[in-house]
Image (tube, rainbow, N blue to C red; front, side, top):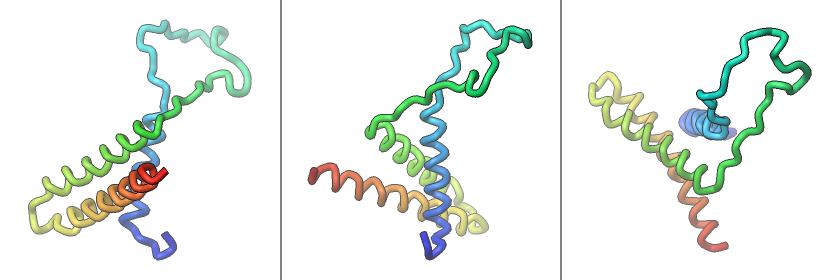
Length: 110
């Protein structure tokens, strides 16, 4: 990271966001919505919800999906004007897949 590897930084930021989104609590659409101010919760943290905890398998699935998304987007960029963007997306996918390969190697040896 100290070398300012833009592909790695971009891939990791995007993947951390995807992991954060995956931990979000699903909204219950059937729950009634209260709109009156006097019925709303009061106090610090009154509207906070406990986030989901992802298993290691779920995290790996999110990282794989992020890599696959980048590779699919790169495959669609066929015009010569988009060659730089396609190469950057492939480099980001390679970074993510490299992390997965390293994680699977350590999991197998443990």
